[in-house]
Length: 368
Image (cartoon, rainbow, N blue to C red):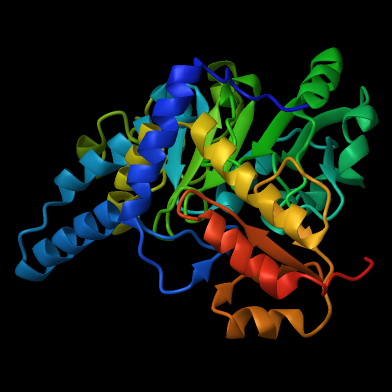
């Protein structure tokens, strides 16, 4: 179903599993943490880099120009993670701001197709364009590819649904869009970091960094295929989007970067220091090993509580009203979305975590 990049050589996968085991030593939560779909945990390398930067700030020795180094390293790290060139990647701080850029650039009267119940940061910016005649049509996720028509200008959908972890059939979707010339805006926020994603297949992708990419809040990525760069108006253009940013501080003329960097937004500096190190860690493990690990734990939990196996690192289930409190008492951190329990399994989780959560949840499932 999915646009999964090559699984690679078995030896590579084995090496990835070994690197993942080593990476787990960088995390030391006080609880069974199964809430990455809300906020990811920081590796020790990110915390160390942040503390060093904060000390430089305290001493008065922080250099604004030096913050470009982690930003560019993170840009390259994300590009590697999703299979594109760094020149395709813009950096910012929020998903909705990048989605709004795309929404504002749609021709008047465009139809945008999205999934029912999609995360609002992906759809609100398009609804805000209603005065220009932009029409948002919501359909069930499972039938979204079949709902693409010649009227469809853009499909805006998450690779992995925030509420319940369902995966979009991206192969079917891209085929349907290619057939009519529609573009795809893919939200990778709940995917990149555990699910291999090839961003080069889509006109645009957008992803926040503070969940599966293990960054402080304040990092976000946009990828734009080169042939679509000139179709977007850089409404938020500022000095950081300049071709030579430290020579773009004052006055006209407009002198933006020629590639996707023209859509950059001045970065939250400390957040990118953490993001650089977290991406370095994730890329060192590899997405195949990350996916294998997350799915194994999620399905271990599913099996233990009587759920069928799934294809997502996010487990969503209807439970009785007392379950959230019982999970908290047991030291298991989870979340509730769309009225259902949501658990998320990532690189720092173990079989013991899955088993502990299953002990609490067993016997508490109810019919949806």
